[in-house]
Length: 230
Image (cartoon, rainbow, N blue to C red; front, side, top):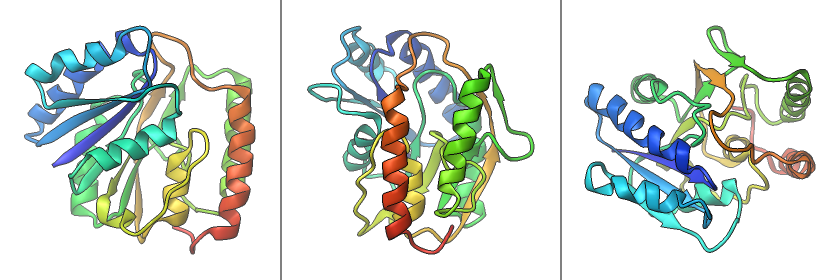
């Protein structure tokens, strides 16, 4: 079974549309899966909106007491799941659920430990980003180059086999948990599947200026502890 981890904070409008779309894709592909929403005490009622789907779909909601951050929410989702296969995606519709069956097929058939929904391989794209965000993204990718050779190490849409994380201590800072997994996990093979990334439909971005500095410090720490490149 595939566990799909979705961290949330004030994503009520988005999660109400996303959950049926995710299960529509799972059903069409004859896939068994669950959604684990990890919510940081959203004042807009995101957790209640997600939990309302539990009568129709295999949805669980983990409620946390405050805004504790995306990466720790992902780790909590991993802890709450018993599935051998884990998926992480954003709640804001920047990641199209249509890619889930394609990514899972690659994970199962090509022997990959990690499959990334990639914006930077042929067929992938980013729609609607302003110039300054593209510039920041390029800088962030350069910082990741000593750690991994993958094209999109900063993607928030990926799948990983649980066995690749066994015995691995993850201590991510900020938003970029995939980079931590690539640096520290038992990763022997990574595949990238092209996706079309779009800006969020509803709500406000959670990315703040301080996150870049968190990422910089995190990257430097990973340079010192990294395994051979994946």
